[in-house]
Image 1 (tube, each protein chain N blue to C red):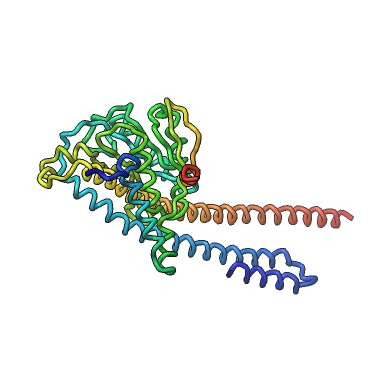
Image 2: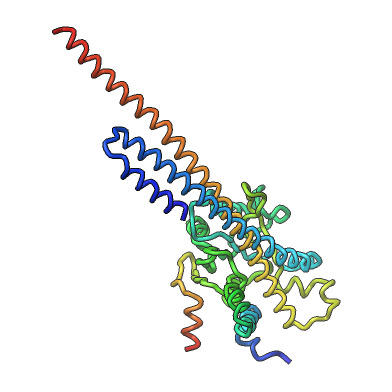
Length: 67
Length: 295
């Protein structure tokens, strides 16, 4: 039986979501140390035949999608 | 903190020297002291940054090695479409880090004799390329811009996290670019003063499925796909941290060399200036003396 999430996102996304849940459930001291490991400020661009598209900040894109 | 203390000391020293003719010289001496303090504290900061980056690299390399073991027994029967991921960063002033990786990618795509892919010379020059880091992106966009599928930046400002690598892997998988294996071009950490470009190969899902050793486990297709995606993130993470450590050490060395060259230049120019000044004074004296003797 395939899990429902497989049709929505990749395994890496799934792992990051579950990791975030685990990090948020830790005790204060360990949580602060772990939060640093979950930070990412990646920006990406799609390219079509030598032309770059708009630069998208990943975390903002996610926030926009969830809102 | 050290710099601020010596600045205060220097200011008080300069204020307590009224009417002293060589006050300019005294200020120069204290300036030198400030420079020395600044340089040694900057060196300390750079060394701690490098030590941190190296620790992260040693930890992250284990992920890459574990990956490599899984794929060691996967054969190369699968197709030969390669996706190149170029691992560099956005900041400069680090010597030849970015150009080393860009040149290695160019050599690989041209199937040059010195390509980082030693055994494989059948690379398609139209292979898709993903670039992490603005510096390499700018270096490659002119010649291989048509091959670009995605570019990433804002990675490498601090030690790269697994979240960065997972985000990159996720976006690459989602973008739907077709590949049979991924070639990661990054800088390998040889020592604190040297690095070399290298290529890490990550097989795709198909290669795992075809491998006889893997078939013995009778995994579901879903699990195989997950493993392929996760091992891509692993490999990207290992390459990112190693590249970051190389960049920190190269930046420290480049800055050291630059300050050494600048100090040497200052010293030689200082000598020239003094000689010139003394020659001018001597000429004036000669003029005065000959004038006086004529009266």
